[in-house]
Length: 272
Image (cartoon, rainbow, N blue to C red; front, side, top):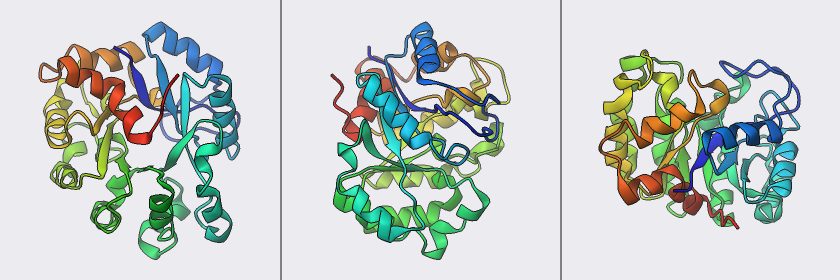
């Protein structure tokens, strides 16, 4: 079984946000060593532009050096549509680029899904055939409207769609709303960062039922394993075995899809 992590970061400067490792640099080579130790075959890089403005270029350089190991969901500036829109037409010609990802974590960005700043993005990405991942928990009703208005746009909900800083049951307070988004066939979900929602130690049993509901809603072709490893409270191996050994409802070919095959298909990453 090939294991592909749906979300990791590398960076070369800045102060990492939140619970991420507080190191000024985390290189592709350091990441590859950790991947080898855990048995991860490949990973989707998400440039952390919010703390390293050069992260997009760093991720593209890594994908160029290791094209079978890394692809990228990158960023163009959203508040300059005149300059950014033309970039999307040839986005996949850049090293490793398979789509876009926006967390909207900066204070100045949190109104953008509502105030019209990024209205141009959705039709432009749809026309360019680029999937877009985002931390949709911040704007689930608007996200549903975007999915409905742009049926050819492949959307990805980050981090299970759960309440970002919630723990245990509190993280799942919006679970019904996330599950409801599975009705849109153009919406998929990254089950990334799952251990970070638990109030317990491995195997994090307090999040199993919530993960099961999400999997049942989205199915193995729209439910992607991943870690966001640099902020996880456990090892990469435990992030893997949580899914491969501790969830009895995830077995066989469905497990293979969740652990890597499905995300590659969704974003159009044709590994060597």
